[in-house]
Amino acid sequence: MENVMEKIMKAFHRKHGWVLLFLTAFPTLIVAQQWKAPTTLKKLANGLTVVVSEDHSAPTFGICVSYGIGFRLEPEGRTGFAHLFEHMMFEGTPNAPKGVLMRVIEGGGGDLNGDTRYDFTEYIETAPVSALDPVLWIEADRMKTLDFSAKNLENQRNVVEEEVRVNVLNSPYGLFFAIDLPGKAYDTYPNAHNFYGEFKDLDSAKIEDVQKFYEQYYAPNNAVMAIVGDVQPDEIFAKAEKYFGAIPERSTPPRPNLEEGPQQAERRSTETDKLAKVPAIAVGYRMPPRHSPDALAGAVTGELLHNGQASLLYQALVKEKQVALSVDGGVNWPLGTPFEYNGPTLMVSFVVYPPNVTEDQLLAAYDGTIKTLIDKGPSQRDLDRIVAKMRSDWYDQLEMPLSRASVLSHAVLFDGNFDMVYEIPEELAKVTPAQVRAFAAKYLVSTNRTIINRVPLPADKSEQKQSGAQQ
Image (cartoon, rainbow, N blue to C red; front, side, top):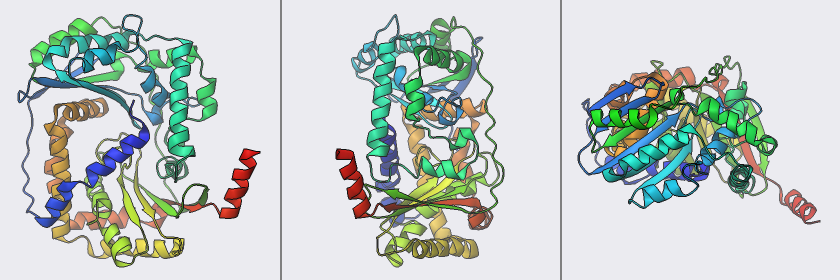
């Protein structure tokens, strides 16, 4: 439902909001303190895993149903299917035609959405507890079957292709830092292909292909449902059995091999952009696995370098050396948090720079910032500031029933348990300047990175293309 550009912009605003300004002005000593909401888990006989977390602060609930199918898990030759199917799930069923889902939830004062990422597709709703039974019924109904009509497929195929035109083909920079960069940084189909989908794959899709995709991936044994709010675990487990228990378990494809061979040398390329007015670079460093001992230090390092105007790269490139106009990025950016991925991921830097600065000049300043971090490490003050921001952001997610349901659902989908959700703040508080320095020395090296320089298409060539298009 929510398109990729909207997701990216929301992530940007979350990272650059007032919390950073407050914490920059009033840095505090980080004290580890674990908070864990009451949370229980049960797996039904058909494989559906149900997670319940009580929050009686308001008579509402948030629900997230996550399926184990995301961008990099879609079959070869089916690029864009995970995203396309997110849209198809809102086209109705034989029992509840298109529009019923929205009327049930929004008519009761609630809200809903869907979202596709690299390792999952999720469907989220929030509403007063009086709407709980209708919402569970309708989620179960679209887990059983959909309205597989050629009309619905063509409708949503057109919507997805229009998203591509708006956000990629007809937008400055065309999300090259999210689409092109992984394509050059990785060597295997799952990690390197265009997640938005190639038009040839989307156009060739037939209703039989879509139905097969649904039957393979939208099975209860490939899903986790998390509910957070003014509910009791026993009540939810009973309702889950009532509405979902009769849905049969289905055979799901084996998980593709996501492993990448080690990168041996820096990868560099240049692209032209007919819409951009100033150049930009995207730098992607391969990151350690999520449960690696280096992963937490990597998440903190990514935020130290990129998070807001107090970040190391912004201060060095924009403020001090004035070789950049803007800096953004981080680990698993822009389509996820540094803690929610289940395969290879990158630390991305997206830097827009003025036309009177060369790529080499910009990279010299960029590399100088990285070298300083390797040689000296971050100051304790900077580390405390960014860890406080990261802990605050994570607790902010856990405070809201809908976002807590989302985080719990993803964790259980990946690991089979939710322990990591409540451990992250305490683990962040343990990261030291020495660990950040060691991480940077190990991972932020030229042989582990890919760089794309995106430059405006020269005016004469751009005009020629425009003229040719009009003829």
